[in-house]
Image 1: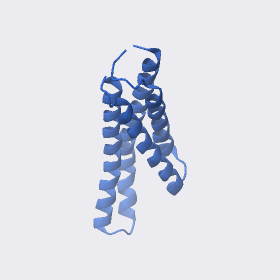
Image 2 (image 1 turned 90 degrees about the horizontal axis):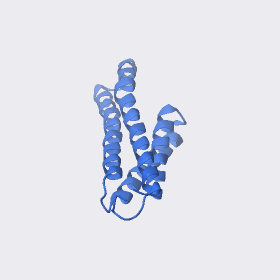
Image 3 (image 1 turned 135 degrees about the horizontal axis):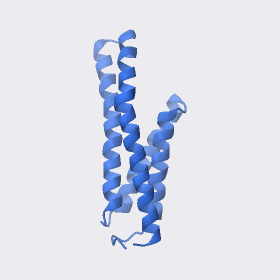
Length: 132
């Protein structure tokens, strides 16, 4: 395996782990804080339930994106570079839009760093599908 591919795999694994941590924090730690805040709000019960679903769906989305990027990065298929770049760029766009709408906070920084790691890993990966 070439040095470029080794470095690329390290970036992809670190980016995927970062996304897994972000998803876990969002689904477990963040969700616990969300319920009391929603109960104290004047939102209708339907909107409260919808916000809970969106909150959990976002964490699930990050976990699935991390799985796809990790599987693509550790495989030797011909489309792995495209998959990793697609995963990284979509999360980078999500982090940028989130920072623009809500400002910078630890969540945007975590998924932003994961996205940058995935994009860097995808960019330095060899185009060929061979593992060497």
